[in-house]
Image (tube, rainbow, N blue to C red):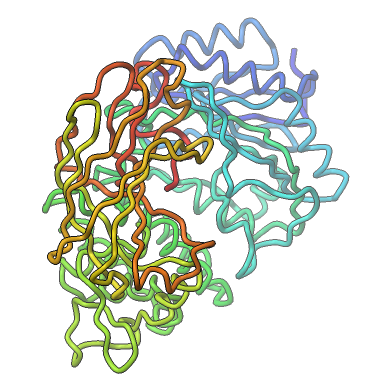
Length: 524
């Protein structure tokens, strides 16, 4: 029989995941490696053999218990709340059925929490690429060992809004009635914000304790990764409204919460708006406008640029300007039109001078880019062909800040993402209409020479005006390719693809060990 009062309860909610459930449960037991633990499996209305697998695990190990729900509502909140109601441990942790804990990690988390008299202990999460086995730490959860102050305006806790990789005192949850919102995705966010703001003391471990298994193959994504479905955005807004209600009596946190939403949550959708159809964009802008218009005007005006621009255009700008503002803020200062220069300042080009406000003044943004040795420009391939072992690229360069002079030239390079080495290089002129046509050589197709991760097509502009910037800090920028451009087949163990940030790259085909949306860690 299990102990009458285990020290730790690990809640594992599962729905139709019979194959991976034993791995998750086994990892939770190994992460404690002792008798005084229970793994509480909540079978969330599974219609396959998951329930039977869970019952078998419980029969094999008396540290495993199972609770069955008759019907799933399609979101994790309700089964997790059921688990919290059934939990018997002094401490509680969560594991998803498709993920794993590192051996011994839950015991180390509890030990550091007890030693520091903390209500919560948190460790780091790493993305685990299921096809390549590549592990990439999640920056938002990389803590230094030691205490972290409860939620405050500048706290790193704003970025860590996932329920896993933590242990928490059950009396904290019960005493503050902290539970997950139900029937929506992103239920972790209101839950963790409530945790962070209620805790007296928080301890951290500077080590990875949890592997988050990631699969980005189109059609096989996890439900939270389906950002191409507008319902996904509606759920994220519902989660943020729940947080707003929680923080109604914490006006000191309102500005930080809005800043986090605009910088992070909106960016996940805004950077891809050019790839969505009209129906999606209309629904997105309507929903975003409804949420942002409810935020206090003084908080919207206090946002740093270019996020203030994004909010202003989403609230009362045209569809074209709102989409352009999102791409500018969230995708490397992407521009489809040059910025406008008036009276020595740079302005958003989608607003006439009599409509412009402080939210449309981008002078400081331009100055920051120039200080980094960068110009505001976007190079886009609108035609990609393969000719005699080379890439022929045709497209346009939008000169956002008058950085391209009459004698400027484009320098295209093919760069190995792992090593940073230039594999080929070609220089071409910029036509008066800012179009280009260039042939970029491809390296040998010998399998030993193929990229471990990817090769990226990049471009720099050199010439009379370009030389005014510090060349030691200027780096070639990615070359974008619109989603509607058909990419030709290369063969011989290499394929062209569009990265998650819209850039043109080459990689080994996905069926040779990569995911379908670009390697993990592709953040260009």
